[in-house]
Image (cartoon, rainbow, N blue to C red; front, top):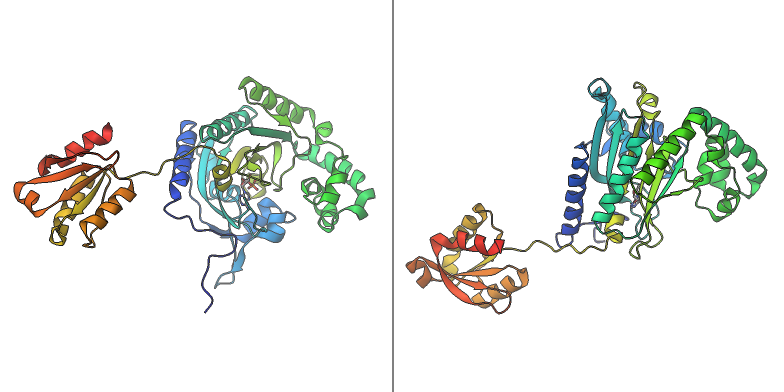
Length: 421
Ligand code: AMP
């Protein structure tokens, strides 16, 4: 029988490695909560149409990468490839626009895209993201970039760089699309098959193409900055100025478009040149999607958000996170003392301490070996003699520590005072 394995591009996260994830997640939560964001958890499965209508039918994600299936009632469902579309659906479904002038949401969770797996590129990956509804910017745009950069520095991502651009709004986009078509059409035959197809459906996406033959052509393409309407240009100017005031270094990349159709005006991408990342150096992408709520049937609502890839942040980060170790490892000198060992462990846990015990009835030597390996601060040794006298032996495990007797009733207080030292 062929052994069962996880789906290609999807990975188990084992307990031995999870502490770095948990540390990152709790720092993310703590950061965004300081900026007033509240958590939203949406379903992992959504109607396929949600992504087709929001991300765009001619994007890589929708054309090639979605995990879509028909359920028993023949409904087309899709494992979410990103978080924004679900947030907008929830925003509409719960009639949020009528409740508060602005909403600040954050999320953490797995996303699914059937991309070609590579280092830093998976088919199940985790994103942490935020969305702000109801604020047209540009000040909030700078606020979330500042929050993001501060977070990445805090978690030890080196040499973070921020690239920004503006896609303008409706009329800018239309005028630019024409200019781009005019420029690209004579090069049509030299473009990749995907880009030739997109020329009609969505010319802007050609700028985002990774095909080398497209990149040579795109390099000379007109820049969207030359087509921005005055109010779009002003929005972008104020956003940039605000980043300068906040002391966030950035570069303007006139051809930054990113792979989702719903963006308008502010767009940004954050990268790191950390050795850990390799070719996949984009850590976070974000931008404004002022038209999306309306596209999905809601009232006109400006909005902006970003999503960062947790795997990539962990690959880039140089911070070491020590796994949590136990305060005490309980050892029973005789197998009949295992109930006693369990009672002591329970007492310590109820006192808020982290206690381990090996309850299989193995030798003291083997239990001591496990205690040493566990990284616990102390071994608590129970023997029949000690039990009769109402005491336990406490042995410091590091530095060839000393051993001394502690009254059983005072054990939790004794260990708690050591744990605080
Ligand atoms: P996007 O949702 O495409 O704007 O991506 C935002 C961030 O998610 C990227 O900058 C990456 O850090 C991460 N990301 C996107 N796709 C993948 C993937 N297939 N595997 C791992 N991380 C990804």
